[in-house]
Amino acid sequence: MRRRLSAVLAMLLLLVGGQLLVAPGAAAHPYCGLVWGSQARSAGDMSAGTLVNVRAGRHACFDRLVLDVDAPLTGWSVQYVDQLVQDGSGDVVPVRGGARLEVVARVPAIATDSWFVGPGSLVDTSSYRTLRHVAWVSSYEGTTTIGLGVRARLPFRAFVLPGPGAGSRLVVDVAHRWCDEGHRVC
Image 1: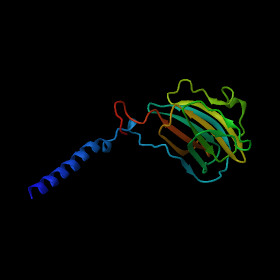
Image 2 (image 1 turned 120 degrees about the vertical axis):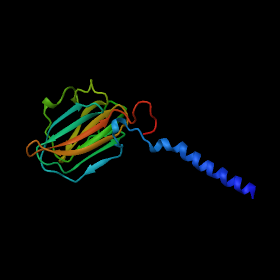
Image 3 (image 1 turned 90 degrees about the horizontal axis):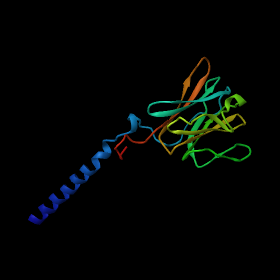
Image 4 (image 1 turned 90 degrees about the vertical axis):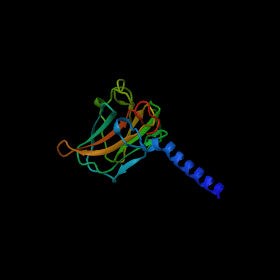
């Protein structure tokens, strides 16, 4: 009987001790309170309108890419890919960075030379913490693809905002890190 009681107590100690070891995972420390992941995001199908501008911005906890469309954008997708490929030709588009996000707006674009800041580049990312390259990939059969090179596979979010006017904006925010400084569990 005494042996059995000792075995039950030992088992309880193991279970409680195991929970104490796991507890820090429950008290996660995401970077800047961001709870984004790195899985693909998308919405809708084809949209009306045209892509009219591509721009980016820096924020305290993330870098932002914005695609401006002159009508409501209902069809888009954003996902990490191994390589970016031009629709139609199948040519691989080189994009700097440790990871690549494929940003697709299901609207056509007529890219103008004024968009480009260098060969194939749409934004000067030299002063950005996370963004490494914003590259023109293609606009083919009503779908426009932008390549977003980032420092590493980091959490991101993507969403559409209305405006200005009758237009809309596809916003892609990429966090600077996964965890706050000094924490390994996010």
